[in-house]
Each structure stands twice: as C-alpha cells, then as structure tokens.
Length: 333
Image 1 (cartoon, rainbow, N blue to C red):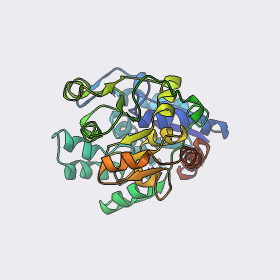
Image 2 (spheres, rainbow, N blue to C red; image 1 turned 90 degrees about the horizontal axis):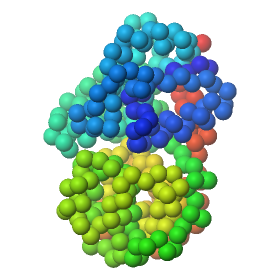
Image 3 (cartoon, helix red, strand yellow; image 1 turned 60 degrees about the horizontal axis):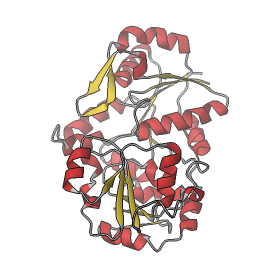
Image 4 (cartoon, rainbow, N blue to C red; image 1 turned 90 degrees about the vertical axis):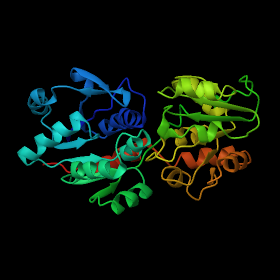
C-alpha cells in the first residue's frame, strides 16, 4: 500500500509519539509498503504555547492538496490532533476518504494539570475529532477501556516495541560513578510526569533524572540532591538504563511509556504506580513492582531478577507493532 501519515509530532522533538513513528515506520516499509509523512518541517511553524518543543504548522490547508496528490495514498492515518491532523481530517471528510487515527497522548490530563482546560471539555473536543475515524488505534487494553468509558468508539489495539540490540544488559557500567543503588527516571520534565512523587522519596543511593522540559530548573532547585543529566540519547542513554538498579516511573498520565520497555530490555526492573501504561507493560509479570506506595515499589524492585526483565521486554517487538498498524488501517483499495 501507499500510506500517508499526518503528524504534528516529528523530529527533532523527543517524545513517545516521535519515537514510535520514527522507529515503526521503517518496519512498515520493510513489509513492502510506501510511507509518506506530512510533518511540521514541511511548513512554517510556531511553538505550542504549553509544549514549546512541539511546532504548530501554519498554512497546512494551502499545500495539503498537492502533498496528498503527490503521495496518492491508499490509506491515510492521522497520528495527532494538531493543525496537520485537523487539516488532513477536513481533507478526508470533504472527499469521502476513509482514515484512521491514534490516541497517543492524554491531553485532557496534561491540560488539566496545567490549569488550561477542564479534562471533560478536552475529552469532548477529542471525541469529536476521532468520531469519523474508521479506527482509533490505542497502545494498551487499559487505555482502550478508559476511552470506551468516555464515549469513544471503533477502538483498536496497536502495541509498541523496543530495540533489544540498543537497549541491552551488556551496556551496564558497574563503575558509573554514582552511589548505589541507582534509581533512574527518564522522560520529559513537566508537570504531568509527576516527578516530585519520585524525587521526594526517601531512598538510599542516588536518584538520576534524564530529560528536558519546563520544570527542569525548578526541580533542580527543589531537589538539589538529585542528579539531573539533561538530554541523553542513543548509546549513552542505553548505558544509563543498564547501569541503573531500578527504573522509577512516577507518571500517572502516560498512555504507554516506551521508557518502561527500554529499561526492561536493559535488564533494569521497574517501580511504578498501578496505572495505564505500567499495568499493561508490567502486568502480572515479575519484571517490576506496581504499588500506590511508590517508595515501596522502588525498594521491592531491587530484588527482581534482571534476566526476567530482559525476557519480558523481548515479548514487545517493533515488527509486530508495524504489522498491527497495517492491520488496523482502512485503505481505499
């Protein structure tokens, strides 16, 4: 098939949506399909007011006809609910073209955490956006149940994967230079990630935080004993994952949490709250501890077999993710 993907999240952004698309779409092409991405780098743009790393594309409608005509897509997928997603949605509805969407980000909870808009209003807008889709792809069964309870329909499962060659226990550095045990968190440093729930814990050893975001400087001042390492990528990130003793995931608002799989593939057990994302990734496996008491979860995770973490992570592959994506598309063939 010829597949067109419209997304408002794209390089050089670093987030789960970008990681998912940039890792999975090459796997889709390996299956013999041709993919065209309509992304913000094709347009003039400005920063999103509450998430400056995201660029909001300007004047999408004026160029969209030419972009779609050039791609001649058999299937159209809207990855995000931003200007590109809305413009492509309008294009499809006007021409009677089928399309699919994905629910990557819990914007209602994010906006409510920033006191921008009540979650019920954001959910109403999102229901309207996704309602005409032939399928809404969601990463976990827990998230599918939550969205169904809020009136979303046509929900289909589309999982995630991990690169087991990059994130590997062999990257571990026992002399990494921080007192052990090392408790690590990786992700955007923003209010919705709930990092104070981790940084405020009474834990032995060291707390390491990888990532950038609007709360970075304030949390540095508030928690001077923690080590904020900024943006770390590729091999250096793999080394940190494998060298940590526990990966602590304090977020209550993620739809999945790719970082969970990256930690597990590195042999590092997870301590997290029992919420969507951790519930689906960890489940009833022995690769992590889920507890409403995050300190207890982090400390109990120290006793988990690192080999079991690796084994569990290998059940999640990008090849399977790509095939699920293809299976859920609604092509005009």
